[in-house]
Length: 324
Image (tube, rainbow, N blue to C red):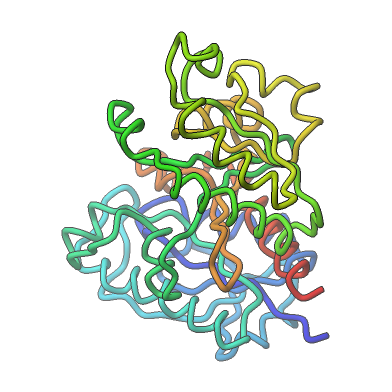
């Protein structure tokens, strides 16, 4: 079996992405072959790099050196201050990484954080974020965001919308698609032949038999029953406040929640630095650290690489699971 490296995109050059790439490479060494795509001028001074022309060369680069597939930007970067002229190249790097993984020259894509406003201002970026752009590049209509760590995996059915809009956005079709993509992703990318899915209710106490809301009765339960009849291992809808203690977590492989904070508060409480953003439903593996560009601490040497390290490691593990 051919060993391929993970393609790590540079993300926003003015953020913490470049320095974390160096720290992650130093921490992981040969355990996760990777290469960084970006402008070498944006890396911290004194970084030991090896310029490569082909991803295959990354496998043989010494552990203490960062393999770099160079992509020249319009100008150097200023930590903490994004530049509009960098936007088109940030986007081009993502496109380049996707092309490499789709052509079989990289094992997976791991994306460093981008700054969406900078991309909109500098290049008219028309997507809400990385996930939607990657789905567009892959020609996939629907993908699912999962946050994962060794302690918990969570999937929000609705994501970046106001709480007031959640009940209307939460449809049977959306819930069913989310559950199907989640189950398929756990089988394909995590090697779970019969994934156990716990589903949260929308309302307090999962509606308490309709007293606190009827979405559980009229919307969620019919979808769960349909998928159970097909053999999927699904529990719920459950009261969200009882789903995330240690004993409850031992009974499922992923928790599917109805809205953003219902899913993300538990995982960020349990493992703030180790959470990984995973996109399920793509024809290739994609992970990302679960943090932003952190302009306020860029280049200060205090940004923690834990989430990027976990994201790179998970990308390699998921790619291996797909191959096997």
